[in-house]
Length: 543
Image (cartoon, rainbow, N blue to C red):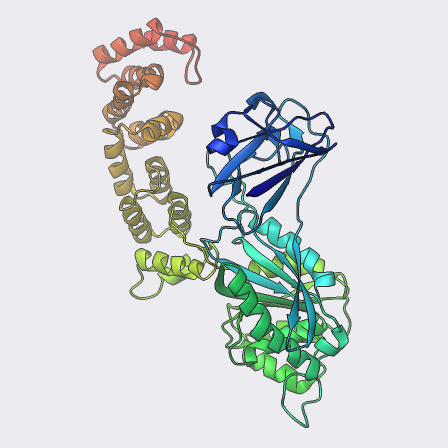
């Protein structure tokens, strides 16, 4: 039995649930009515076959309930697994009524567990991705000092991982990092657990008693527990500020460190031993380490400034390290640095910035590069399929660097895959890079294509094709053949393609008789369009 609760905007709202199975009405919007629990709450309990997809209505699709803000898509709600018995939703507005309030839902779970290492209860916060799916894996961001750090890092993780996909499936690119689980760690006695050790003269242990227990708790209890409760990848990150910033920067020196990404903010570095140890480590470390410091954070910006000098002097050259300053005081720094820090932790996510540099190496191949790119993203739990948009991105890079050989290799790779760069985009890039051999190959494809996208883009970008074939190639007959193929294979663009055939022929004195035939077609079937008007036809008639 699954209980579904919904909060409604009006006392009088009668709510129906409608979804993808018999108990949800098989998408009939007025079949399954929810029970009134109170003025603003409706509820129903039923047996569901999972995964379940559903929405809410007031009895008709004309008054569908919006559980997201009106400017966003209103996707089907989904229950993927039965990890809980009760699910609660909120209707912000109805389709036939204007929205009067907005909401950004960032609620999270609070969990208390007994720690054998501390011999006391420990409290954590857990925020799962909005559409958490146990069948895929997620990176985990552990945030120490949860009372002050959890909010800025949770909010920025949410914003950076948000997708904005239209109803047609177009991704508008807010997808900066992969979705991740965010775990906040509250401290029972922060001073005991996180005070840094600065005296290394008597022993070289990195931690005092309390911070040693915190390390053991994270390594041996918390991370294994999260891994057992949720579907996690091997990519764990950890965030600390001030005392906890110092703490997290010590973790890579320890065996079995589970954290491959580190954000360390406002690090106190009074000890020369600690500073030298960190500088030597950062020259070769393989974890992604982001170190942030505030310019107005006296006493906690010395290490950051020192590291910046080392980087400027090229004493430290490491792509896995980023040191960044912010115009901030000690307490302002977390909010200002959270976005930059999180983005750096996932700096290889859907990131092709290394493509050109890698292409200069011996034995480089596009296929091998993209294979490594997919493997790099898999550590985040993401199974990435290389899309036509991805290939277009790297093809643009080759054009920018005027590398025809590499451009052709990308095009060849693209042609071997179902999701490829659109032919028109290859043509456009070919002319930009002056690869006329590839441009001609695309023209030959378009002379025979019946593909709807190819035909639409030929008409939509007709000026480019006319400029190339008529003005540059001096081949008006080829241009006529191109638009003749559109005329014969697309009833939607018959009028426009007939006009181009007539225009090219009459203006360039080729195939005059046939061109006049298409001109007569345009006059007979004329209707308002974006390409030409009746005055244009009259001018052609005088040619």
